[in-house]
Image (cartoon, rainbow, N blue to C red; front, side):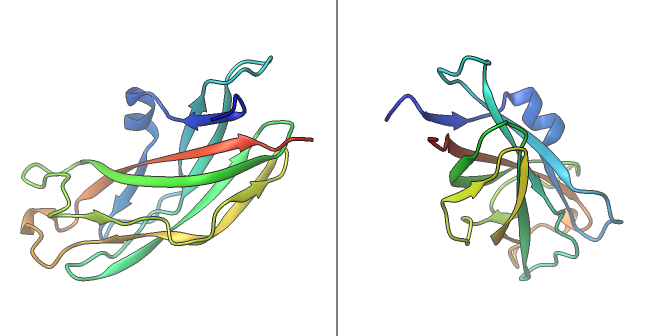
Length: 158
């Protein structure tokens, strides 16, 4: 891999504080944000971009909902996002574990790579499918799940 590649990964504390909350049957909240930081040979310090996800609502056993993602590039140059991944990392309900038996997060369905303008925001054309399996425990009804999202990107050469 070249020096221009960077893997965007947040610390565990940042993921816990800023991960996307997936609400099952709860009131509307604004988009959640994860700031992804990657080490690079960049003069100004670490490179970073934000992934903003629209909370998924109304999940019931057997249903599949689409979690839309926006990429915010606060940097003064274009970046290309090559890969997005997501996984269930936590839940707010005792007795409802954050496992694939209770909530499943699939691979991003859209086309990548995507280029994001300098100081720009791009809503991605695809989505991350989220589903509650039919066999999910009853204690998960109405639970809020935390989904950790990460991405891999690159600075676009001039």
